[in-house]
Amino acid sequence: MKASFKNKILFFDDLVEKVAALRKSGKKVVQSHGIFDLIHPGIINHLTEARDQGNVLIVTVIKDKNVRRGSGRPIFPENMRAENVAALEQVDYVCLVDDDIPFECVKKIKPDIFAKGRAYKKRYRMIYQKIDEEEKEFYFGKSKIYETKGFSFSSSRIINNFLDIYSKETKHFLKLFSEKHAFKQIARYINNLKGLKTLVLGDGIVDEYHYCDAIGKSAKSPIVVNRYIAHEVFAGGAFAIANHVSGLCDQVHIVTLLGKDDSRKDFILKSLRPNVTAKFFYRDDGPTIIKKRYVSQYSNLKLFEVNYLNDNDIDGVCEANVMDYLKSILPKYDLVLVSDFGHGFITKNVIKVIEQHSKQFAVNTQTNGANSGYNMITKYKNPDFVCLDETEARYATQNRFGDIEIIAKDILKTINAGHLIVTLGKRGSIGVDKSGEINKTPIFSTKVIDTVGAGDAFFSFTAPCFAHGMPLDLVSFVGNAVGALAVQIVGNKKPVEKHALLEFIHGILR
Image (cartoon, rainbow, N blue to C red; front, side, top):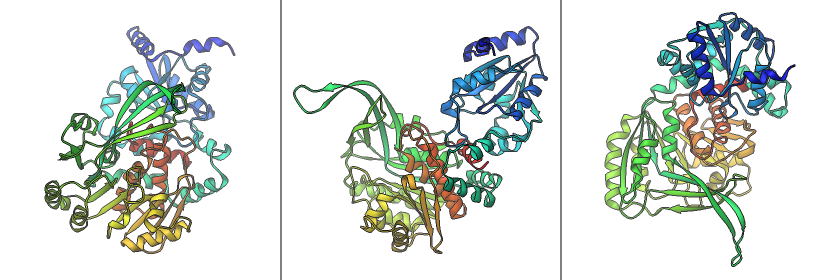
């Protein structure tokens, strides 16, 4: 094999120029797009047939950071995957591309023909429903779509069956689960959530990540001195939940609290997704909640955190205004998601209004550094769905070492909840409902970048699933799949997308 095949690999801008020049000279350009993690007979056949449709075949290979086929994927790093494709004689040019917005590269490259495997036609329609139904012309309007026949080989199936990404127990779970729930059924459930009118109520938080590099110990005090490198700002808390939900539901409304001084309103409005509307209330005696985390650039470990907040209850005037607004608007929504960080916005009186006027409501009471041991789920009555982590569940029952199954049942009975899921970190999650059904689901993540915001993502997806009548085992499965995607995102930098979730589920069930 000659080293010259690496000359086929181009930077994206160079590839766009190359394709434009080829088309201008009369060449018919064909593009194939994917992960290309394993080069198997199905891939070879697909690329051969694609090459026969034109004069030049270009292949765009999705970068590692945008691969969503399941934990442990991709097996091979992006540069190696690109080189493997470039080594094939059918291929003329290769390029690594971002795929955060699926198929965005097709719009920019503008090939004459976009080749995809016929075997994936139904999967693409289910996963990229919005693109398939509403935006097809936007992506492929100037390119003809050609479906190759391919062979019945699947990279995901080969990887899941022959590589030890998951334990034997998790593999066994996935095998049994896939026999009970087909991907097509799961995709239909999730895609049907778009009509659910959803309101998010809770503490909005501005998350700041300040990246540092340790340069040594102070000569005059026992502290490590860090050099500032960069920082990022994200919309967290209830803002993040609204953004997550907006990928599932077409109509999302958020009700939250800001500080009058330095409200960060402009940043927050820019950070919310287009289909999220907002109602802000303001407090005079505190700021918009800001949580600054100082993070080691090298290890990604959090060094310390500074909170800007007033976690006392809002004053009587503000509370009355919130209650009046909620009474008028709650009945209009199919589901209310309560994101309670215990920072003073959701008072006892506000809770009563939620309980009395919501068609269905789901609750997550967060434990954090500002409220540890005080913000309990037991202040709510009759929620339809509750999501907690293990620490929050143990605090609520004052049971530090007991069986988590018994603890979950005790909470469910105490607050008269319809359903409850407790996330257990590396041990997955446990779900329980009023009928006494217990469901245990293993963890699906193998790569963790940041756990901040993972619980919010879990809650954001599982609550609408329950509200739409999905069974407990399926909701727990969806939640753990979302969690596996969320821990690969730094903080609340971006929401977990529906298409990413469906790709992940399709990958692990093959």
